[in-house]
Every structure is written in C-alpha cells, then in structure tokens.
Image (cartoon, rainbow over all chains, first blue to last red; front, side, top):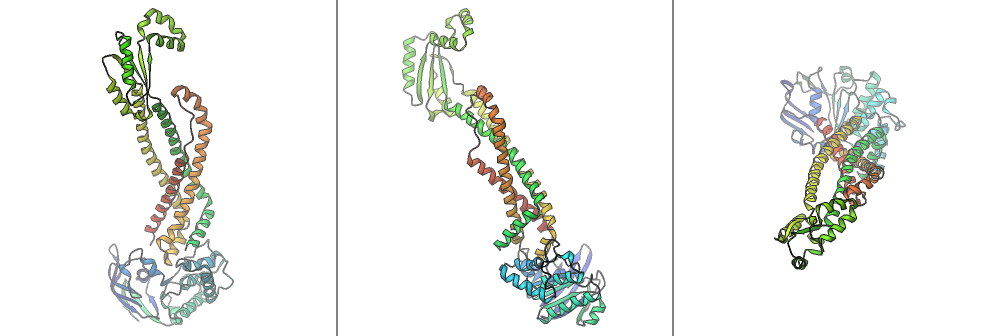
Length: 218
Length: 296
C-alpha cells in the first residue's frame, strides 16, 4: 500500500529524511515513532502530498506521489484520511458540517452525504452532537470529529500525526480504539506518535526514526 | 457540486457581510470615477457630432469679381455631389445680417465703408461628406482665383477632435490605472475574506478539494459583489447626471451649442456592469490563487 525507495527530504542543508526505504502492507496498522525532529511528520507530509521528496520514489496506493502535479494531488488525497494533533476543525462549522465537507468535495449528493455522515458520527460515538460547535466539545470529542472526517469517505489509508498528543489518558485510549476499529475494517493506518504507553497498550508494528533515518522497520 | 457552490457562495456573502460591503464600496467608487469620465466623454462626443452634422463653408469673393461671374461659380459648385445647399450672400446681405445680429456695429461699419464685408457663397454639405478629411478635400477642390478666402470653421473642430482623442487616450490610461487599483484593492480586501476562511480552505485541500471546487464559490462571490458595486456606481452616475450635468446644461448650450446632455445608453451601462463583474471575479480569483499557492 505504501512503498518508499531511497527517499530523501531536505530543507536547506538539513536532511529531514535520509535514504528511507519502507513498505507498509495493505490493511496494516503501524506506528511511526521517534524523538521530536526525527522525521515522523515529514514522512506523513510526503504521504499525503503536502511535501515532495527531494529524491527517491514514493508509491502510495500504487501511485507515484512524488510525480503528481497540483491538479492530480486532490485525487490522491481523497484516498487518504489525515488526523492531526490539533484536530484542524473549522471553528465556525458544526460537527456535521465539518465531517460532511469531505463528501461535498467528492460531489456526493446531499442525501447520501448526510446519511453517511450521521453513520460515521455514530461510529465514533458522537451521535446527538451533529449540531454542536467544535469549541463546545472536549478534546477527545474534537479528535473524534477529526477522525470521522478522515474516514467518512472510506479512504484506503488513514494517517494520524500525534492524534493523542493533546488528549488526556482516557480520551487518548478512546481515540486509539477508534483508529484500531477503522483498521479492522481494512483501512491501512499509520500513526505517528512518541507515546510509548499507548504503543505498549495497543501493540502493533513500530517503525522508528532518528535524525531522519529509519533505524527500525519493526 | 453546483448546489454546494451556490450554498457556499450565499453563506459566505452573509457571513462576511461587512467585508463584502467594503468590496462593493471599492468597486462602486472605482467604477463611478470611470463612469463619470465616460459620461463626460459621451456628451462631448455628441456635441462634436452635432457640429459635424452642421458643416457650413463660407467662400469669400474678391471684391473685383463681377456679380455674373459669382453666380456662374455658384451654379458650378451647386452641381457638385457634396453640396446640399448653396446660397449667395451679397455685400448688402452680409451687412444687413451683421447689423441685425449686432446693432451697435452700424457706426463702425459707416466709418470703415460698406465694402468691408465681401460677398460670399454659404455652402452646406451633405451628411455623407462631413468627415474632416472629406471637408478638407472639398475645400481643396473648390479653391479658385475668385475666392479671397474660404472659411469652414472645421479647423478648430478638428483641433477639438484631436483634443478629444487625447482625452480618450488619457481615459484609457486612467481607466487602466483605476482597473489596476480596484483589482488590487478588491484582491486585498478579498484576501481578508479568504484569510477568515483559511482554516476551512486548508481543510478542504486536505480532504481532496480541487482548485475549481475551492475557487468557484469565491469567484462567483466576486461576480455578485462586482455586479452590486457596478450597479451602485451607475446609480451614482445617474445622481451626477441629475444634480450636476443638468445644472450645467444651460451654460454648455450657450458656450458650445450643446444639445441636451444625455445619460449614457444601456449598452455603455451594461459594459460598466460587465467591468464590475470582471473586476470582482479577477480580484477574488487573484486572492484565492495567492492562498492556493502559499498553502501546502
């Protein structure tokens, strides 16, 4: 599902990623871990097209992501759900509107998108919160909205960048359980985290980065 | 996708009402300046057109040309295709005309002698031959040793036309400057609107929104704001027409022989609306484009 061949990413004279070779199978759940500045976020950015590799080949779902131009990139992103530490919810949109946006983008009819959005909100435990504003939700609930938005269009890959970084223990567990449930439905899940507690509680393949180099493929 | 775009546009218009009003104001002000200029040019053109329609040539005979020769010349000229009407004005007729128009001139004429006013032919040209080049050609053609002078008053019309052309050229330059300034102002104001929706647009990009999907509501919004702004500018032009131009009407009629000053025709007003729509769309497009390029 995800293949990296000798991938480099350089910012100025700093190597954010250096000669990374990695293969993530379809339907796999993997952690990407390492200290701050190790290259976890850079790797995820390359995968969802927010950055391009300086060198090397990067296949996402069989597509060479490094060669996509600006007009092709949206179609790659429709197959990838992304969850961020800071949720990236639109503050002046309700929970429902935040989630349905991902379906508006692909041109789904209003009835279908409404039905699907309600079903996903139900899955992540936010039934009855459709009309709430993000600011009125707890951190855990906000992250569940972000997860709902990331999975509502049934992407093949779900990327989560420190999804529990802003959450306390119980909320972090809730979110991890949702990510694992998403993986059980067949979605490839890649979670960037340095929370060893969670990794120990929910053991899965762990790839480790240090100073931009892949030091353990798990 | 269309229902979504329409919903988004309507919502954005409402949610950013105060900023949108600023954009409408900027477009209205810019187009009002351009529109007022067009209004002036439109009426000056009409005045010059009216002069052109009434081309009158006076040919003054040497005093020693016999009367029968003068009539022979008149008959020859009357046969030319350019001539609509030709009238012989004798020295006495000219003096009578002058005395009628300027009664106080009698004493001066008595002193100078009756022969001061020469006999002339007053020629009116057909409409098809009133272009400056046609007139010059005609005057060249009728030059003869019988005439001491040919006066066709077109020289200063020509100069005025040249002046108008210069004004038009300045207008194009002024219009371009105004357009650039309005696009700049609209783009910067819209940038605030775009900035207010930055989070939303970033999220939209993240979930796979295309450039068309993100930009179309903004461009449509710009078109609506442009249409509103240009309509306001036309209202302003109407106000100028009623309050200022119509008050100047009397003076202009006296000074320039102007016909009734007119409000620009619908085609020009539609052009202003079109320009407003284009300005709004361009400003919004430029602003979203800037965001699109800057965002990852």
